[in-house]
Image (cartoon, rainbow, N blue to C red; front, side, top):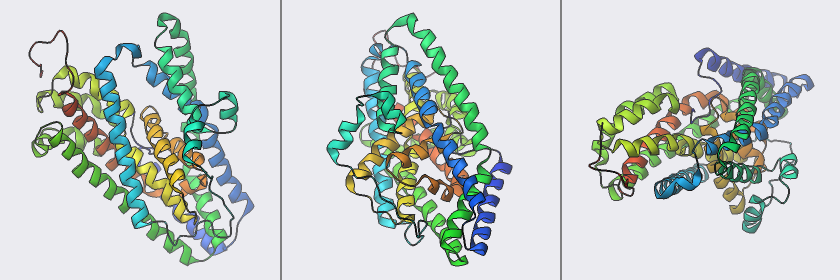
Length: 414
């Protein structure tokens, strides 16, 4: 589980994506017009990503929920943990939305110049009503993501309650997930070509070097917005929760947990960091190991504060770049989808592009806008993952005060 949205960790691959973006910008700016073959390459890349949304996200969520064991046995600890993590994730999304609306990093880009687009219209009741599908197969065929997510979580939860009979079904979805992951890796491997085609097409339609420079500036403003949001959430919001509710010193706690946080930043992988996080939080931070052993793996699955914040900022940034105004109900859809997409991203290593496309598609935004993000994504990925791991650790320290073990003696820290 990466808890991130990077296509690849290979620095050569990242460099290829960056080169693809630069070459696409140069070709589009020099030609000043759209080339059908290049446009076709970009369309195929995006269509490939959209093709995998349903099987990949659906299967990953069902398998993730099923891996929790019988949901009826999670008890108070499980319920409180899930509620806490969902709350902090929604808080992170809201911080991201506030900042991106204040900074407006996508204004002036005109990525959709000459293209008529409409944003899907929503009302609050439509959002709630649309979560529960009358026909799940029709909803999936229509590309409606929220109903599919609801069904997957509901299905996975019920699957945990039927005992051994569930195993063949779980095995089936694990197989679907593994195959979908293989397909995703193949498609993501073409990202340098896809980015080249998307950027070249967009700038070719807009024309001129001016547009190229404006887009580079916008990417810098976008990165600043994401990092600012992550800093507010990681340095202000989470420590405040730790101090007020967890009754711990934030400075002491970050000193205790600095190793897994820096490891998360260096590896951009929350799964690789998890064993270190679990060991450090009990031996150095003094959190009961039984709490850490339950809360941290669950957090690595459903608590992706940094990823959710990033996807919310990215969606609004793309809307701004295309000159689209987002109503409050539409931004509410982004809050819900980014939160749920972050849960899905936790079980989708190296496939965060799919969840990003899912957020854009659900909000009615142009999915080709992902081409704006890929060149800087590898860098932002590390900040997001560090916040994800830090949020998991804070959650364990806070939740230790609200859970108990019926067979427990003194709290264990080894």
